Image (cartoon, rainbow, N blue to C red; front, side):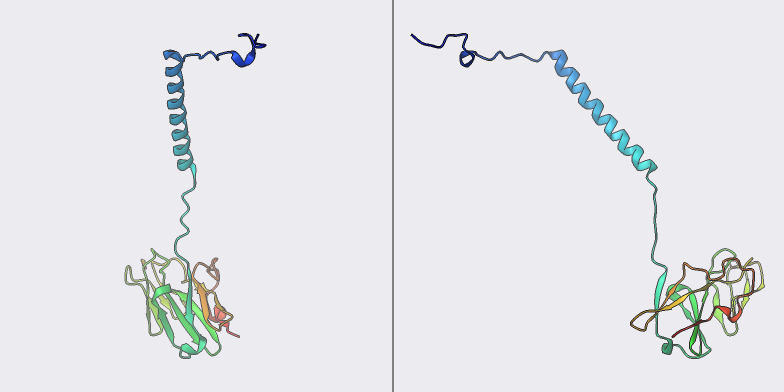
Length: 173
Ligand code: FES
C-alpha cells in the first residue's frame, strides 16, 4: 500500500486561476496611465531644466611678446581685440563697440565704429558718441610655454569710472 495519498502535498495539482477580462483591462489601463505619467514627468523635467549654453571659449592664444612690433596696435580679428605692445608690456583693447556691439575699426591713432559713428581714442576712451562707455581692456597671461593668452570675457575696468589710459598695460615677465 502506498504511503502517499491524494492529499499528500506532492500529489496535489496546483489550481490555475484565470485572469478575468476586467482584471486584464485594469492592468492594461494601469500600464497606459504609468506611461502617460512618465512621459509628462520627462517633458516637465525638460521644461524646467535650465538651457545653459556656455558658448565658445573667450580665451585666445595670441603668440609671443616678440611677435608684436613695439608701439604698434595690431587688430586680432579672431578675438575682436587689439593687441598693443609697449616694450615688455601688452595691452589688449576690445574692438566691441559699447553702443550696440558692432566691431570697431582699429585705425592709426584711434578706433571708429562703422555702425553709428562712435569714435574712441587710441586707448579706447570715448571721444564721440553715441557709445556710452569706453572700450573694455582684457587681461593677458603668459603660459608656461611662453605663449600669451588673452581672456576677452574679463573686463579689467567694468565700472568705467576712470579713463583706460596706460594703466591696463600688463608687464610680461
Ligand atoms: S554700434 Fe557702434 S556706434 Fe552704434
